[in-house]
Image (tube, rainbow, N blue to C red; front, side, top):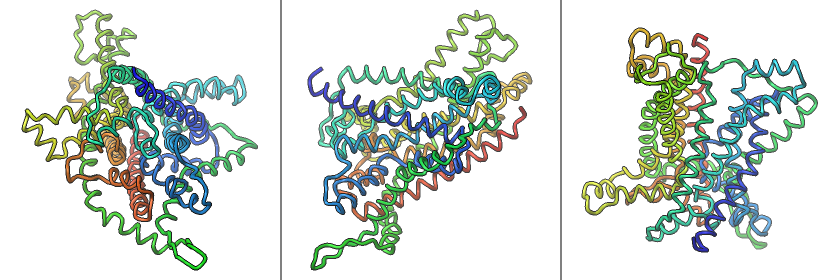
Length: 534
């Protein structure tokens, strides 16, 4: 390993480790306040945080660059050095982008703790001890999953590091591809990806563990910890943080879009014009309708493909968990679909564990591989001069970018659909099995009709991931095909001016619509859960 490679590895670990150390404590605290406390207005705050999950990294980078970058309004107004530059800018943007993810993952982990356990523990001790010994301890797998998610996604991204000229390995692969040089991938990189995949497989297993295997998901409201006299202190602190997280970058984009500069005798005078701001936003998507069309076409096709495949994989995963539970507890009266009854229990358990490991590992690899390396693998797969049909598909179709977006959105869709499939009562499936329905019949007659709200939520989640993906798709788009993410990323290197700010604001509105549609789907999903017999 040469000095350059060692430097890239060191920078990658430093960036991802710093972001994880800063975002996880804040996200866990916010998860507890929004999901498990009586904080006033916590549903509104949670809606803001969930909305930020849908905003892609390049939009957040553009918003902060518009305010505090080299050409930001604050930098120009103070005539000083840029607050966000180099390592400081990369860590800041990545941390604020990671906190909403940690909040949601950790909050859902705390949300799944059985209320009966906490109520019983409250009889033996104060709420503070119950939180540390029951709630927080029971949600440690979710916290670990959130930390893994932050480390892997930060290490595999090149949007912010390329903007602030931080040399990580993902950024170096993209840079070499951008100048026309196909980089080699050293052996240690694949070893690192394999190690990260194993860690994510463990994390995926923890995520699957959010849904108990031997009982249906609970629909009871969780116990809310009283904040007491600290309630208003935490409210002010949370409101201040949400302003920093969402309002400040959004305000920077609005100011940039409506900025007017007039030359006077005393110098340049800057002012804000609401009319110009609205005009820029209104014409942004019209002027870039070609890029918007490509984004919706490729992203929509990728999301549409990830939902049925993810539903099938989620059903496969549920069947595996039922089999593992039956084998582990030697319950011979539970239906073991596909199992031979003459097979020893030990071999059955080994075989089902092997299948479940493959089920976890396939998604872990997709999450662990950095975007530029995924794009490089797709190039080597399709760009083969000796195979004219592959070469035609690579040069004249959207197969390559569609494949990149599909592989990135499939794990997210599958995780959402896993919880949708797991919410179906086991008794209903067992009754169908007793009547002679096989796994395929139960899938088409029970799982698919009852999982449509989860399928809608998974589609919109996958669509948001597809519209926001950049690191892999930027390397594999054919000539003449431009998406909005690639357009904005290229324009960011020239500064965030009014046109770029208008495009970003229009995209923020688009992602807000996607988030609202996903929220409606989740609402229907919750109503369906309450309607199931328990």
